[in-house]
Structure formats: structure tokens, C-alpha cells
Image 1: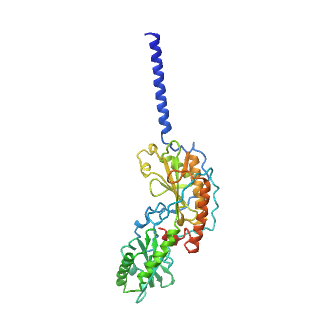
Image 2: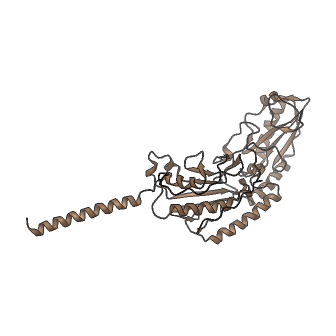
Image 3: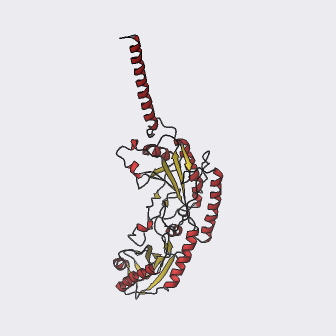
Length: 384
């Protein structure tokens, strides 16, 4: 074999090795980033103590209350109809300092609040004599919903004289029932009011009670007025984080989100950031592809974007939710080599976020003036 032939063979071998090496490097470079063992991972940022929170469902209208005292589901993700388009998000150069959360921030109960004329059309029921909680529970309608509007029944406890959901072992001197005037599906309409009347009339017939229904047209008009206010003061904000280079695996996203205080939600591909008060809705939700989270081999599932969402009327302003949202988005973008953009993929300058923050303060003030403060039980019911 001549020297020329040997040289060509060596050159060919070197080229083949180079092609294989380049292919291997490219494959590893484009593979989704995976979570590091905690012993090798960077130190975890200080995160607020984990507190219990309500994990809302995707569609509050699809949830059927099982009892009169149950709270309606609090949607945190996007809701169809009636809600304005979320403001665009922007790039943030560095994480913002976390705003202090007041120690006296109210801790609202997980239970559905009592009927309130601010958002309920209330009907008093006249009883012939005090009645037991067992009799009331036995006569309750199978569902406490008229169309898309929930309704609740309350009794005035014969001993305490307080209004409460009927309970076995108690006696009640009076009853009242109320249907919600509006929610994110729209205002109470004539068909829903008629369905409400039919269900309550059957309930009253079983108890020998006499209902005093309000005028339907007045109730529907009140619902429309409340819905107009709610539609003008509803806001769901969303930031999108997109991978600049290599994609992310679900474990990689979960690891970095956990360092900021996020915990697993009820739905695969969803994490939530708890509030300071027990029993309150999550402040933020982080979501990514559910199919990637359910993959047989999540480490090979490629995620190129995640979303951070804030349902403004559901979170008390004392939680500083928007400041925490900006901080979380900036921290995740920096740690995961991501870019923060709007829904169309366009980055926006930080000053745009400052304007959104100012607008949110005005929205909070408007809700306060209507006695529907963000994060309160009434606001969570109305914006559901």
C-alpha cells in the first residue's frame, strides 16, 4: 500500500471521528436541561414559609357545590369570556426586592362566606315554626346551582341568632336563600332566575315554608350592573418565559421553581406559590406542558416555555402579588437562561411593568371602594 493511500485512510478516519464528535456535541447541546442533584445545585434562595393554600380548578363554573357552605372554586388560570386581555409582560434585568407582607394581612376562611346583598339576590323564607337542621338538610335541592350561578341556603340559629349553613343537631328560627348575581360567566339572567325560583319553591314545599321572591326584572338588572363593574375591574396577568437556547426538562423547571417557593399543584405541569395566610388562594401559578410532565421519561421531554399567572382579584394586595410575580419571573429567567416576553413572544421594557403596577393599584382601590377588596371571600366568589 502506498504512502498516499495510507494518508488518505488516516485523513478519512480523522474526518469520521470529527463528524461523530460534532454530532455527539450537538445532541448533548440540544438535549433538554435536566435537574441537578441537590448536592451539586446552587444554594437555594430564601423562600417564604410554605403555607396551606387553595388550589383552584381550571373552570369554576364546572364545579358543583356539594353543600351550601362550600366555597366556589377559585380559577387562577385563564377564564373564558368577560375578562379583559392580560397586560403584556416585559423583560426584567434583575430580580426585584421582595415587598414586605404585612403581618396583619387577613387570613380568609376556605369556607364560602355568608350571603351578602352586595353580590347575592336574597330571598327570605317564612317558617311556621322553628325547624331542625336534619329536616332542612333532607329537603335540600340535589344541586345548589341555577345555570351557571350558585345559590346557598342559610338558617338563623335558634340559640345564637346567627345566620349559618344548616347543620344537623341545630334548630333554626328562620331561613334565607340567595343566588349569586354575577360571576365570570356573566350576569344572572331570566332563565337562571326562573330555575332558581323553581328549585327553591320545591324546597319550600317540602318544609311548609313561604318564600318571598324578589322581582325578577329588578334582580336581573342588579346582576347586569354588578357584572359591568366586575368586567371593568377584572385582570389576569400572564408572563411567558421562553428558553433562549437549550430546552428545559420538567424536572429542571420544577427544581428552579421550588427554589423560589413554588410547590406542586393539583394538576401535572402546574406549580403554585402559596400566600402568607393559611387557607388563602395561591398567589401565583406556574404552568408548563402537561404532556411533558406526564411523559414516561420526563428527562427527555423538551419544554421551551412556561407561564406565570396572577389572578388579581383573588389575591390580597398585602401579599404584594405583582412585585412577587416580577421577582419570580426575573429569577427564573436568569437561572434557566430564559427570556421574559408577552404572549406573542415580544420582549417589553421594564418601564412597561411599572405602568402595569400603577394601574393595578388603581384597580385595588376601586375594588376596596366597592367593598369587594381583592382576596376577600366576596371578591373570590364574584370573580369565579
